[in-house]
Length: 406
Image 1 (cartoon, rainbow, N blue to C red):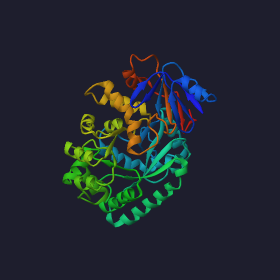
Image 2: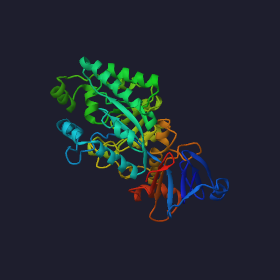
Image 3: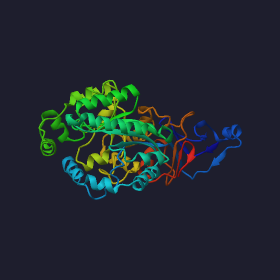
Image 4: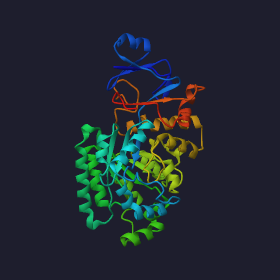
């Protein structure tokens, strides 16, 4: 048993003082240090620095590890110029991304407090790394392909990758399913994959309405995607429409990524069907996608997470870098209230979305923690979330299942 007594603990979306936590693999009790000493006299005491804050381990719901080799290769500024550069450099970047590089990025995430992440996997190349990193991984096997003539082959390959990921549940890997996007997945394959997620109760995610170009293609078979599909696929018509795509997920709550170009009617539909959104502020900015209206998500009570996306559209997988970018991007409303929502978006909210036994500091939860040390005493309990985001680049310590890994 270990007892830790920080200056502040994040419990039930608020910060509390004069409490300590005792844990082994799971959280056993939360009480005053005096009471815990009496009940657990042989427990090891974990010392903390002044102005320490104990959080549940952070959760990054949307990461692409396969493009971790990218630094200055891909082109930013607009979605289509970025996509063209991805296609041009894809083989080179994937070939340069070995296991050691992906493991280093897992370590970098962990330094910012990430104890669980959602890996979006197109080829299964990062599965070995995900079985070896100390972090827990929701392994989203991605299906992609809009050509009906090879739909069976694509689906067969997808099932093989999914089955392979199922072998590693005891290594902290949760098998899951990702749909690439409405413009890139044929409806036949889409329905099959969603049905697997539904019948096997697997986590499900999908990229959706990331760019204006995507919206124009799905609505009118026009815009920049028209030239793209004519050039690469000899096609002038989208395989699905926006409503058809959304309705495919009606009976399977899905974590949609980006959704920047959705209108209010579509967001209301997502809310009614119990879906959620992964918001990637830096990726959206770098690819010229626009601003997700966080205020509308709040109004409609749509759960959202803050996620880093991958290094194909970002310069780090540090969750604090992402949170700071989000604070600067979303200028409406109280900044302290927004900071509090952002902390929830990497703790309790993703834990609820994916039914994880983490994300909260309460008895019976996994002992996944991120300990932050602020540079000075916070002016109030209400300011701690904001001050944490503003002043933290790396956490002080990390525990996963009660084991200290940083």
